[in-house]
Image (cartoon, rainbow, N blue to C red; front, side):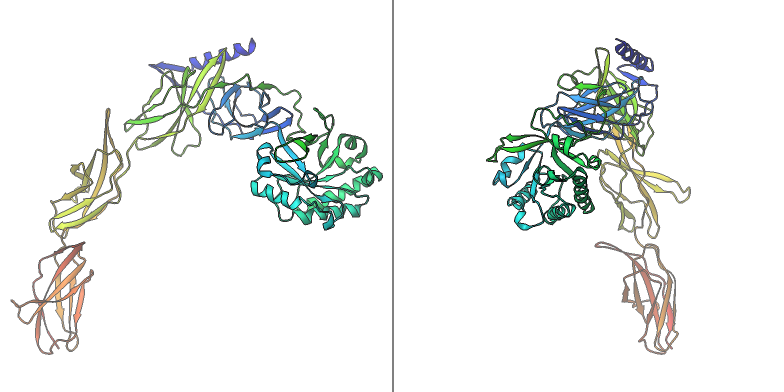
Length: 609
């Protein structure tokens, strides 16, 4: 009863900390909380999983989410102010996905932690030649791993397991995780060393997921030496295996681990315990339990050994709180069909589909560049209008459903994010090309959702950009231009909405020139015998020049040379000495197939030396 009273009080505080505005409760409280870290899942006991995480500063409790699907179907359990729970009610060999959120007493909820996985009853088999030729394609779906015998005794090829290579190749082909074991007959450290190298010779071309196990159970050989010699042999074997970069463990039955392998060094190595029962009574730490030697599995013609694999067996979980997921958990899926609409340069509307069982929705937002989402509203309906945003900014939103059951609060999964920009994209790829001597054509890329474009030109007197046109298309021809003048332009995209007009940022400046300017200051001079050098001032917008020549000042000029680049001089070298020549020049501006020409200069003459 005290727990429910506390949660109801927290909900009342949440209501007091928010103000009602239509269907939206605007948030006035602290809005950010770090997400839980170091989330891990273990299976320290049969039919149980343990999920734990680090506590979050400022959190008053945690929500545990679980599902059998990676990206959907999560149910939520309010586990109150604990950072680890034992989980029962699991399906055999089912993979579960878990994530955690922190929350405060005023309704602030963190983002999801990283997702972790756990499986109840991780089942594997251990096999050798005694199991015959195995149909691994059939076996694969029935197990999570396999432990394969590589052989027995000293490092002789005659003592390799005759099914080892095939079994290892099949597990590799099918992606079945596997480890290996060797049956020991050692009575000395020399034999233990030989057995270690026996294993290493056979596994060197394979990738092992599980450890290499030293099988100590032969009473007629290993069982005859003292406890300390057994420890010496195990030390020798395990040191060689670890030195080669492999995980290592020891296999024996419960009696041997309790009464035979009593050297304290055995506590250092992972234990694989055999006890054919419905419970393992070994009191020490162990990672694997061989619980039967008589199971029948499709794809194997003989009875087979089966095992459970554990993680976190060294943890003290005796007094940890527990939840039963077969009876606990509220399903509040993520809101779907989340959409945004830009209402103005400073306002956006977020909408979504309703979630069955939800009584409210929490809206979260972050600005581009922010690391964390902040809670911005609690709304009863499925629409939220966010006003007073910064213009020319990008905002990211997500939504989760909320409900209260029997005085306990539950927050559902977060929706996918949507991005709202308080401006539309800026026109780019702008070009300015001459059409005639008195017109320039501007072109740019279309902007999604733009309804019009505004064209601005710089006034060279005021140095301000002045709007010269509005157009619906993606080009505009400026006919109010003069040849030889550089004009500067910008373009802005426009979007009309129900509540106003949104403008993009101004494009980059583009310069344009219609026809080329007139060539000025033409001079002609003969500096060497038979030559004349022409010089002039470059014309604005010129991409080339035409040179005309005559022996008369007032007529008879003909085109004698075309320069296809911007230049300011040219020399003739084969003229008649003593004769006077006259020259005129005009500028060219080429754009595609269009060639625009300036007027001619006045004639400039020179007598050839």
